[in-house]
Image 1 (tube, rainbow, N blue to C red):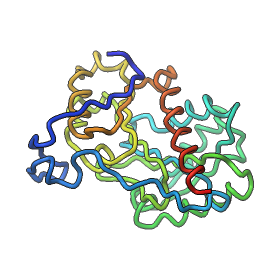
Image 2: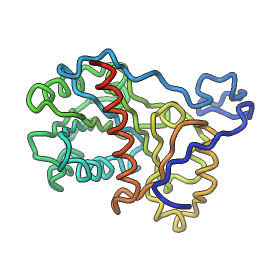
Image 3: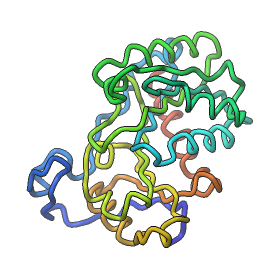
Image 4: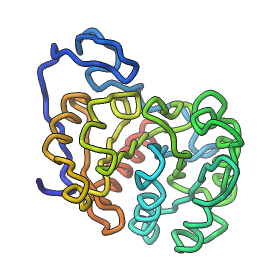
Length: 251
């Protein structure tokens, strides 16, 4: 398997699957199958609130490392800001500051004080406030919002995130893509990170590629190594393409 390539393989739309909630259903008849998500919110005034990229995934999947790599790849040519989410600390923000992802003033932290998914879906007001504040100060092209680590049922509200990236890693096992959940089936991009660990943990990348394609149908999937910048240029290309399309259609 060549790392960094986007997989968009089509599969049998009638294949039967078991969803993350344990419901046995036929793909064609289940809302989560095939890959389907809400359209980008072209009506937004991006002067008030910049184009946003939501990055979610389980604890330890490599979200912060991916945010760092994206910032490194884009920061010289594009105006970027970041909002991180942690429950009781600012650990992820501190990591990005320590590694000089962006100038410190371009990155802010939200302490959610509760379930991470609530701050990006049910009540995203704290994150929205930070995004708008960064937009006023810096007029960025893109604001990246990193969620706190959560389970497969978590996903961003489309009111908060224009483009959603969901990150899993091979250390969780090659069964993860077929477990489903809105992050896997409905995100704009699924990222399978830490492919360099596959042999060590006994994960079969071909199985993960097959299952991701089955669950997402036309939805793109990238296999990456964030710490080695493998697959990061492709992620950035998809982000900036979505940004340009959204800004063009909102004017």
